[in-house]
Length: 358
Image 1 (cartoon, rainbow, N blue to C red):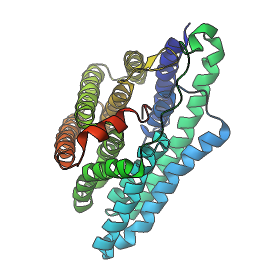
Image 2: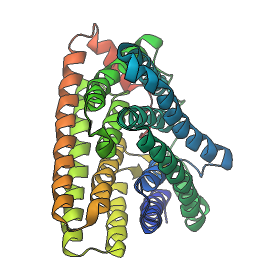
Image 3: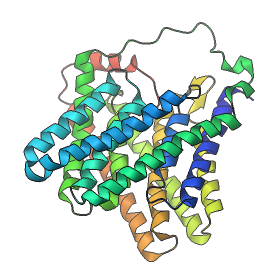
Image 4: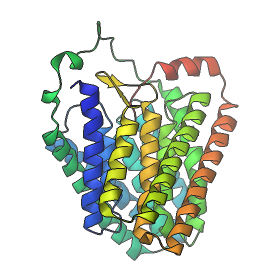
């Protein structure tokens, strides 16, 4: 078996097992574990060690706790709180744009967004969220190790793990000015939607939507205008179609086994568009975010109660919100980039920058 097929199988198996376990345990945030597992297995890298796994969990939980510290300002000194939150989100986008780990950047953004959106409605709900996310993240990492134990890299044919020809040197990180512009563009995508959630009394019910919005901000930290806009649209369409198909099947045949098989099958389909040889395809990140979209759309609907009328309405409501947020994000990318000073030079820098998937 070549290394690309091995990674496809491992991502599908690990994500499906993680979903099955978290759903069987009946966690409120059961989709956190498979999202965590999928994010890590979507990277064409060896298995993470104990230190790396602990680091990822701590980053996400720490971001939630930092968001908790912002709540007094957001509730009583709103302008100060929004400024502090904007600076924290800007730093998380700047971290990725400068060549930092995109997984770490995404978890920082998701943690800050979730904590502030939910915490301004109910501190008790936020404490439950922190507990659920922390638990899900720990088991998400555990299933990464399970997937690597079942399908280790050593079982791949040795010749498939070698890159063809001489390996080029890693590209230099973008300069500070370019990274700052990209981070500001991401902030312009996420912050207005987050402010709307902060002003909404139902933000605690749409945690999955905030995960999608936060991930969209990270999704456009390394792309030029047309590529970023196309990636946002395609990933949402991919995830939306997958979630609709999965929801209709589960409405006819509600079963945890069917649910698990659907997640695994989606991983096999997406994986063929992510991995290629020892690395990944240029559009791998788009398909990875599409897989994320499917999970965060489908999982909350399943938790609402399969086959029920209210669950069906909530599913379609989230789907419409996903597409609405995506359309706004695409427009924001084009409007923001219309004011940049040197599109040609920025495009060259971005294309030469990192090619990580998430």
